[in-house]
Length: 190
Image (cartoon, rainbow, N blue to C red; front, side, top):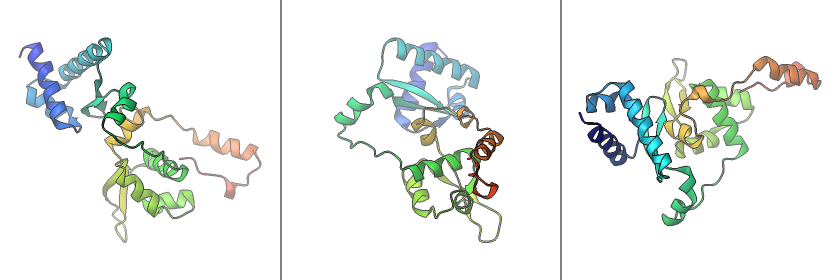
């Protein structure tokens, strides 16, 4: 197929969808391989950046999504009359970090690490679309398993969980030991 047709088709499909589309499905629809799709998307994004366009195509793990560029976020919110999103509380950020670094996890696991009930925090993150149910654990009571979503990746400006900062668990325990905290008071790393 012609290059202009393919780039136009990518834009049309991603724009019309509004949601992430798996790269494999998009490549199959366009009858090209995934490497070619990736190169075409990179070319589109280079063109958008060079011409200061108001949108970009994000790669979210194995999917693509067309979004407005963050630079134009404030003016977009004003034009659409959206209220500013309230920032996440410290508790919600802790829950989100536990889920992101250890997924899939149960509510019980999160509560074990935090030491407090997390029902409302988990529900709030699910409502905001930052975490989602990922099935059930094969254990008594069949507790729900939670993991992060593509919205989580987009909100934090990363394309995969591999881009999360690395945590050195031993280093954290060493720092806590230097501060004189007994082992039972040491905070588990996320």
